[in-house]
Amino acid sequence: MQPTEHPAPAAVRREAVVFDLDGTLVDSLPLVLRAFSHALEPFGPRPTMDLFAQLGGPPKRIFANLLGGERHVPAALERLDDFNRDHHHLIRPFDGVHPFLNELRGRGRTLGIWTGRDRETTQHLLEVHQLGGYFSAVVCGDDFATHKPDPEGLREVLRLVGRAPAEVLFVGDADVDVLGGVACGVDTVLIRHSREVIPTVQAQAWRTVGSPFEAYELLLAQLA
Image (cartoon, rainbow, N blue to C red; front, side):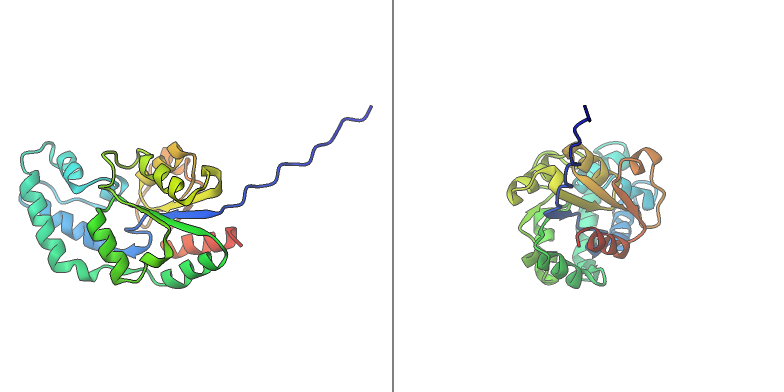
């Protein structure tokens, strides 16, 4: 008796793409590094690009980790707010973001954002750069008590767009993005920029690329 052959299961169509914001859709990392350096200058060593591996929560938590305690955090946060208020206009979308998002929407994909940035400045960036209309769900760093890599925020995005993890791709540029995506069961594209990525983290990324533009090209090819 011949064995019964079963067709291979069809690949699940990626119906939605979720993005981090800073370093993924908007070119803010140099300014973030300058802002953090300014905020921490009187209290500790200057941060390096390695800082971006842990971004995903509020500056209060990050500063406490970098300074080894809470003592100087209020003063550092005040310096951060002053710097951001004076330089916020320098944050711009990466080249090609609008055509890229238009193309994804034209292909019927639902788009969302999961960012560690607070709600107020996120909404400001989306409005100023006319990005808000692309996204069906936006979850920010102060929407929940948990922060990346805890997947609660990503699960909320999936709930809002009505998609299962296997139907979604997530794109981010921090280690916590990869770890949060893995914890949620969502394949994650990691943009590494110019930094070295911990091998155990890179091994968990669905794909690793060097720049946002490479991520955009990859998604357009994968989501044809």
